[in-house]
Amino acid sequence: MKLTLRVWRQKNADAPGTMATYEVDGISQDMSFLEMLDTLNEDLILRGEDPVAFDHDCREGICGACSLVINGDAHGPERTTTCQLHMRSFADGDTIDVEPWRAAAFPVVKDLVVDRGAFDRIIQAGGYITAPTGSAPEAHATAVPKAAADHAFEHAECIGCGACVAACPNGSAMLFTSAKVNHLGVLPQGSPERETRVLDMVARMDEEGFGGCTLTGECATACPKGIPLPSIAAMNKEWLRATRKAKR
Amino acid sequence: MALATRTDRRPSITRTLWDSTVGKKTVMAVSGLIMLAYLVVHMLGNVKVFFGADEFNAYGHWLRHMGEPFLHSHWGLWAARIVLLASVVAHAVSAYQLSRRDIKARPVKYAHKRRRAGYATRTMRWGGVIVGLFIVWHILDLTTLTVNERAWAGHPYENVLATFSTWYGNTIYIVAMAAVALHVRHGFWSAAQTLGVGNARRDKALKFLANALALVLFAGFVSVPVAVMTGVVS
Ligand code: HEM
Ligand code: FES
Image (cartoon, rainbow over all chains, first blue to last red; front, side, top):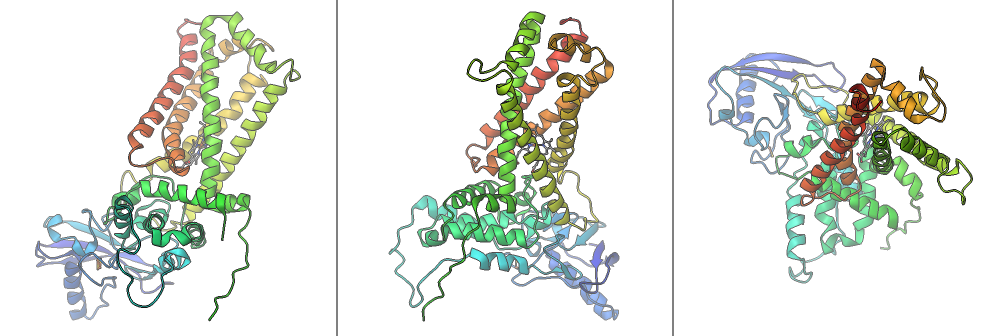
């Protein structure tokens, strides 16, 4: 396959950026999108140019590091992560636009790499449980109802990639935050911090400069892990409940 | 080692609500639902126009004397007006502040444009502004009668006919009702999500209810100018 790429190039956080056009040839349909970018970077390095910086780590769809907006869609046209997107989703001769996540809370570091530290700080604000240290506890010591386990597991799938923020017209982190609030809130292990968790995480989310939710649903459509939109309503419910109780 | 004891206190509920994006949405949802309930009642009152001038004017008269003899004349009406004014102000201020924040949170647009992203959000913002302007016009037209060219104080039936006998009266009204219907369509369902009532199981029912409310409000309100234009009401 031969492709035309229009890629966001930006030297550093302060430099202005532009969309630069590149041609890549010899792309196999079986390559992942990131392998296609590797091919472009090899060319660039051989030509003595600066390779395109992009985030990646596991390349198997579990770490959440990869983060590209491809033709306007976070993680591109398939419902998966960029690393699991294959070139067979494109046609020979296509022009593909590649941009970084866009949100005030995710500043561009270089090219396609953004700083997602804001997510870490939301997690630090309450995305944890209090657990005794030492040897692993007996798995059946705390009974977890099946429905709660399923609900928690569905939300534990969030890999914190930030596609929800990238897709949201308001740059809102509600879906991400709701994933963790739903995940830990229904488990007995998470119940001691049930109120403080949601209050502190939502407060942190606001402080980081994410926008509010207008329920357009773009986030849930973009989510590679299928965190559903109603999770936001469930978090709102938790937040209102915690506000009424307002206990430490 | 002992952990430090946290002594800082949570701010008051009012502060928590107003300072949070989730809380401000709650303010919008509650004020929006108050206005929505009012619109349903208002629409039911309006269709009394089909039963003639006497019934409609008597109804208008009753509005001013609601709650008598317990309440003094106009007190009931003013109570309703105060609740509505508070709702409109709370709703519009929250909408403005949240929208400002949302726009700031996404300062750089994508070079590759997609069609539908943010359609509902934009419709809510523009629709809301249209509804807000209409509320001002509507009060000047049929409450204070300032802009109504053939105004006759105390005769709402005749004033309604006067409004809907001008092309601009009809146009403004019908456009505004379309905006209201679209606003209610997304707004009612949104309010359910904001208040935590929505979930996957109820989603279809809530969307159906939102569409039904929007449609019934639109049909009810617009039936009046249509009836005047076609001479059914004269
Ligand atoms: C002063 C004029 C108005 C303005 C500027 C306005 C603006 C807005 C905006 C921007 C939203 C947010 C949409 C979103 O976040 O997705 C909204 C939501 C809403 N509006 Fe209005 N609106 C106005 C009048 C009304 C009226 C008259 C009603 C009554 C039917 C109403 C009912 C609602 C409801 C129920 C919501 C949903 C709240 C939520 O998302 O939880 N609005 N409005
Ligand atoms: S690189 Fe780990 S999810 Fe894509």
